[in-house]
Image (cartoon, rainbow over all chains, first blue to last red; front, top):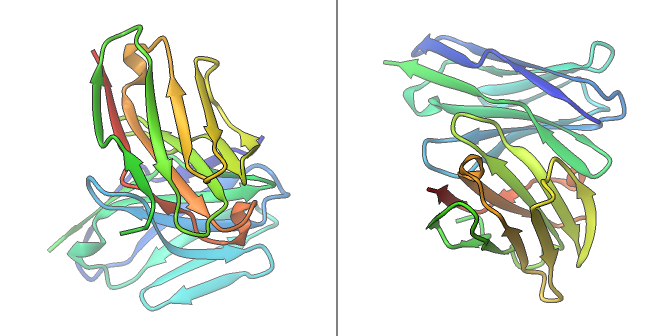
Length: 110
Length: 115
């Protein structure tokens, strides 16, 4: 079955710096790669997603890139702000299962 | 508010007991997913239902079972509870049978504590 690895597990950055979170997946049939943000004590919420026919997608300060050959995808957050502090989960969808990575705890210091 | 309702929000019980968690999906969503999130852990996929039928299964223990009813609400039954079952259980819903059709909308979760 699908396996998703996510790195790093924790990431601390200064406000205004960029943050990059990387994920790899195992099943080449996976075709949909969303990213969810979970603030402390709250539910996960979708922030951006990318499908296998696209290499890059951007939405304001966040962007996601996908390398199907290498089976990895990354989340890029530019000009980080304290409200970006949260746990970020990548996920890969294969047939009917959406498998999540283990999460990255991002802390943005003012 | 995601539109997904989970009850109860908190539940404390003893080892060996059985509990039922309930989920009402967003209006119009046919798929319901259950995920387990242990302390400092990721989201472990348990099971998915689509329009009343089991669609996909993840790492769900035999002590756990679920179903989706004709009105599309779902229940997750956890039996012979162990300390390690303590976790936050999320329900999520989406429109289509496959997650690739779009976003999963998560409920607020049911926090289970087994003492």
